[in-house]
Structures are given as C-alpha cells and as structure tokens.
Length: 360
Image (cartoon, rainbow, N blue to C red; front, side, top):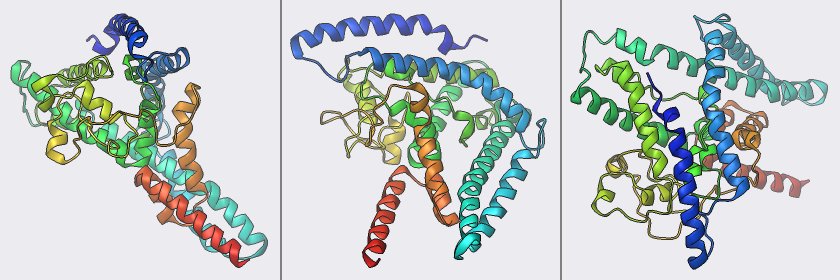
C-alpha cells in the first residue's frame, strides 16, 4: 500500500518553489511578511520533515522491545516506573529533614520523579498504541465491515478527522502532548514549508486511538489511507497566498482558519484544531475567525533553527520542572495540565521565593 504522504514529496517541493516565487514577487510590491521564505527557517522545517519520516522506524524497533507484557523486556518499564515512584515518595518525606539525609533525599527525588513519570508514560503509551491498534481492533469488531466502497471511505475519512480533532486539541491542552506538538508551532514564519515541520516524538504520547474506527467496522487499510488524506489536506492550508474561500470557510478548514491556529495572539491561542473540517471547532467551542493580523510562533519563542533543540526544548523544560518539584501533585500537574498552568506555577514559585528571601 502506497503511503500518500511519501508519494507526495515531489509535489511538496514543486508547490513550495511556486509559493516562494509568488511571495518574492508580492514582497516587491507590498513589502516583506512573515510568510516569506528564509534559508534558516526553511532548512529547519525540512530537517524536521525528514526526521518525522525516519523517527517512526526507530520508534517501532524500540516499542517492540518494551511493550509491557510483550516486548523483549516486557516488565522493564513498569518496574522502573514503580521503583522510581516508591523511591521518590520516600525521598519526599525524608527531604524535609536537615543535614545529610535531607540533602541526599532531595537528590533522589530530583532524579526519581522524572524517571517514574517518563517510564510510566512510555509504558502506558506503548500499551495503548499496541492493544488498540487498527489491526487488533479489527480482530475484535465481531464481524462488522463497512466495506471498501463509499460508506467505508466516508467513515474512515470523517472518523479520522473527528478523532484527529480531539487528539490535536489534547496536544494543546496537555503539556506532555504539547511537548511533542510544539515542534509544529515553533516557526515564526508561515508558508508551505511550515507544514513539514512535524513532530518526531509521537511514541512518547498517549493518544485517542484511531483503532476505534476498526472496532466500528472500518477496514485497517482504509484507516491508513485516511491518515494520508488527512495529512495531505493539512499541507496546503499552511499558506498566506490564499486569503479567503467564501462559503467553504463555514464547513472546511482553510488557510485563513489555520493561520489563526498558528497565531500567538491571545485571542487565537488554542483555536481551530480541525484538520479537514472546521465543523468540530464550531460544535465544541474552539472556533475563531481571522480578524486581526496573525503573529506566528510561540508565546515564548525559542530563537533557534537547530532541529535537535526544536524537537527537545519543551521536553527538557518539562523534565526540569518535574525534577524541581517537591510533591506528586506538582510533578503530575507539570505533565498533564496545560502549558499555561506551568507558566502560572513558575510565577507562584518565584513569588514565594521572593517572599522567603524578604523574610531572610
């Protein structure tokens, strides 16, 4: 079965070249814009695109070895997570003591907390991905088969789009998932090359499984093809060259709606999560029209074109926050709550530190 996203590679480069020429001509008359191509930004996006194609192969080899109950090291992750959690919990109690014991306990907690959460998260993610894969769910669907015709294709594409909406929304509302997805929002530019700036660490996430479609009777091969259709649709909406699309704006995701999604403007944050259809955002309260100039990038930009830093910066910050936490409530909150919560908690810690320093 042909992977549509790979087969489209020549189209990617051809369309990016055409867009680049158009934007260069536009800039001569209207001045430069955040849509224009720059060497460093485009190179970073293309590097992340290549990484997103290669990463699944390495991830698959890793996952096969560590899936709880199945891999070569079936209980390693679970035992590591439980052992680190127990050690960290004990260390939290001892950390309140003065002297050598307290200092040693704080060092243990600083390491044990991140290890417990990382190992536990990977164990849960790999288990969910394996157990609820389209192939496994197809075997359990009790003979339901929507066929390979119009009904099957419609269910596959619409169903994938619906599940994608929720996964995409969760990637903005759960920091552990945002750490994976933030790669795609890291550019301060917006053009077709931005569409290729894709995550490389999906294996570390826990997502709503697309295998649920197979349980409902959608054939696994159609689910795989629906993924390709979905990703191809998302490619062309990463452009500033198309401004509005009339009545289509009411039903479909368009370049205008997706520009909003990439905006760091306060009114645009966490809006327009749909892929092909914008109706999910309208139904579930996350829709916003483009009615002011979009400022692209993150609320706190990382100012780098290094692909490794682009891919890892939020994971690094999250691990650091967990390591510096002194209780499980904070540790878990830094992972499962939104990025905004982390910023507020940083501010609270800083305020508490300033008050303590004032008393000293």
